[in-house]
Structures are given as structure tokens and as C-alpha cells.
Image (cartoon, rainbow, N blue to C red):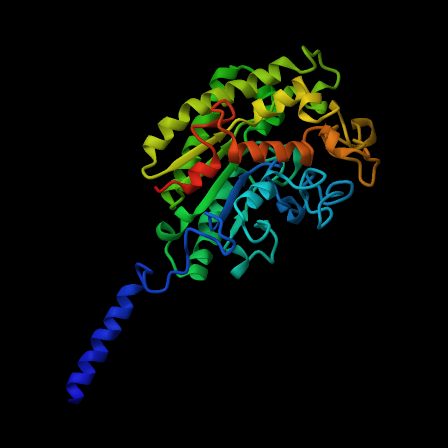
Amino acid sequence: MAATSSSRLFFLALSLLACFPFCSCHCSVSNKNADGGMMKGMFVFGSSLVDNGNNNFLPNSLARADYLPYGIDFPLGPSGRFTNGRNVIDLLGGHLKLPSLIPAFADPKTRGSKIVHGVNFASGASGILDDTGSLAGRVINLNQQIRNFEEITLPELETQLGCRSPESLPNYLFVVGTGGNDYSFNYFLRSSIQNVSLESFTANLTASLSRQLKKLHSLGARKFVVMSINPLGCSPVMRMNRPTHNGCVQNMNRAAHLFNSHFKSLVDVIRAEMPGSSLVFVNSYKIIRDIIKNPISKGFKDSSTTCCEVASVSEGGNGILCKRGGEVCANRSSHVFFDGLHPTEAVNVQIATKAYFSSLKTEVYPTNIARMTKSKI
């Protein structure tokens, strides 16, 4: 009798041990969050357009938005978001019915249970290339963002959920929004690469981003949202002291358009090379360009000037960031640009809404986020 009991305990122990490599015994992840949304959470990579405050924690970083008037309309005040209120990531989180804002990776508090609905790794002034952003002091480039996910967040997530990444990550959205800084603060500023054609530089850039997406796929990511580059030449900082056509600097917009065209055409190719994946390309370039071409019809009045007071170069600024404690426009929802480069919350609302619901393939390709997140891989 005792031998029989010992045998049962032995085989029970073996069966429990067998569970752990596959996590089927205790995995707590599901394809719905507590509020009924289709995704468990989001992991975010990119630059200032999607940064939720990582640069706040980087010493010697000049690309920071942790002071007023940034965040003047954000419930938590200045948070490191480069706009007056919510950015696209906050708004997408709302559409996905996520229970909380996505925390910044560099915040020491972003650990333990706080990571189960996702983490934001994006860093203002960073780019696809490692050396983009060096002019802004310390930033976190895209390759390092992915390493931070792989080496620090992912092991902790597996511990929190009791799941290995191939089982849990298909329930998360991976958002990548980067590339503009590689042109604005790298290609067009560095004399060392002036002999490189725009076409060659763009081909290298899209190939690099493709490799980075494939790296995330190899770690278990399956649902991707990739943001286009915005119309760089229409931003106030780029139009300063430069010749324009229809209000925008044409060579800057040509670069953005070239990148976007290359990358959109690669979406189907990349998907075929990443088994089980789904991708949505969000054409924020077109969405913003349409607003600028006909602002009144889209609910805007000012599509050319900044809403906040921007510090000029002669004042120790860079023509991009708001002056600390400076003046700010009263009707921020009527402005396209909050500072010299970044859109207002009102524009972010339009981008996020179209990304999630639009049926136009010129705005989202090949489908929208709502359909993609509901599809089975």
C-alpha cells in the first residue's frame, strides 16, 4: 500500500514538472483583457511621437518633454509625452480597452505586475539607425529598445504570467513608430553621408527596420502596427528659413514619402517571411497631409504655426521644443502642431481613430487595427 502511494506521488510530481516548460498548467494570459478588449496589452518602440516618458530618466538627454506646457491637457500633467495631451499610444490603448496607460520602460517603477499590460520602450530623438539622435545627447536607439525588451522585460513578463513568450506574446500588440529622425537629424544634417543618394539611404533604412521587426517576431511577437513617417517638410521647424511649395519643404516630404512607399510595399513581403504574423501599416503621413491641405473641413484652423512658444536657436533652443513655462495657445484643438515638430492631441485623435477603424487602404494597409486584433493567427 505504501509503495503504491509512493508511486502515485512520484508520477504526480513528474506530471507537475512536465507542465512548467509549456506553462499549460498555470498560464494566466488570455486574448482578452479584464475590460473585454481583444488584446492583453501593447509593447511600443520608436521615437518621440510614441514616447511615454522614457527620456525623463535619461541623464544628459536634451529631448525631454517633462515640463509645462507639455501635458497641459494631460490628466497627469507633464509626463514626457511630446504633446499637450494624449499621444497616439494612449489613444490606441483606449480603443483596445486596456485598463491602464502603458508605462515607460526607463521608469524604475515599471516592474513586476505593472508590465503585464505592456511597456513603452520608445525614446524621443531616436531612430532606426544607432547613431541617429546623437545630437540630442543620450537617447535609446531602436536596437537597444529591442534588447531592453528581450533581456529585461520579456523574462520578467514570463515570470508574471507563468508563460513562455511564444504562448503569451500573440496576445499583445507590437507598435513601431520611428524613422523620421533618421532623415531630419541624420541624413539631412551629416556631411559624411551627403554622397549617399536618398534612394540608397532609404533602402538601407527600410532593410534595417525589416530586420528589427523580424527580431521581434523571433521573440514571439505576432501582431504588429507600423506607423509611417509624418510629412516632415510641413512641420514648423523644417519650414523655418527654407523655401516651401504649398507650405511645405519638398525635399523633406519627398524623403518621408519615399520611405513610406518602400515600407508599405514591404508589408506583404515581411509578413510572408514572418510565419503567423499580422501587420497593419498606418499612413499617418496621408492623415496629417489631408488635414494640412484642408484644415477647416477637418476641424482645424491653424496648420502652420506652433501652439506653444518655441525657444529659438538664439535663445538657446532648437526650434522644436516648447520653451519651459512659455506661452501656449488657448484653443489647442484647432492647431495641427503643438511644438515645432509634434502634433497636438487633436491630430493624434484622428490618427488613432483612423488606425483603428478606417476602411481606406490609403490610410491603413491591408486592414485596420480593429479587424487585425480580432483575427485569429
